[in-house]
Image (cartoon, rainbow, N blue to C red; front, side, top):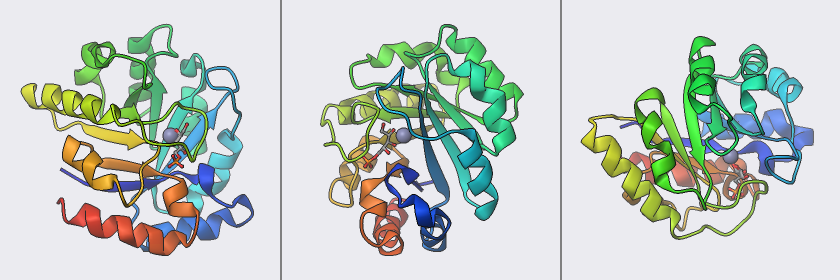
Length: 220
Ligand code: DX5
Ligand code: ZN
């Protein structure tokens, strides 16, 4: 299993975004997590395709787009064109989940499916064979800097057990409220892709990335 850090630029200082991303890349973060919010599926609005297009060639990092967007199928092609390597959609946001996942696959990107804290894990069961990654929201989507919801650990565990039963080595991404102090619990539960916004970009992004990477490497 590959253990990966995905710094969420939502918490970054956008006037120096390129430099901030570079610090995470130089210290071993393989992904950049890109949180797209539409003001409908979640209350806030963040950023979209033009920002992705501008940053994706500033780094070699894998562009991990997390669409907190109603009916995300409408934007799959646009994110592919903007440089996304993967697109993750919410099971709660899609009228036709299967068609949305197929569309991401057809566009040549890795396929991710996310569930909110109040959504039962059984909602993702029909799609386990169809996805490269399951994203477990560990806070209510829409804002960075929230407190980790402890019940998320049970969900991560339950999904890892189901994947193992099916002999699937699918990634499980944990997103929201993850810090150096609690990341081991998240990894022990079965997550292997760690999203961290505040924990990376509040303070020295390079040093913070290095601290996460030391822990992630001990799990390889
Ligand atoms: C929340 C986003 C997260 C967020 C995480 O809606 O999906 O990716 O940026 O931020 P932190 O790590 O600050 O909780
Ligand atoms: Zn996210």
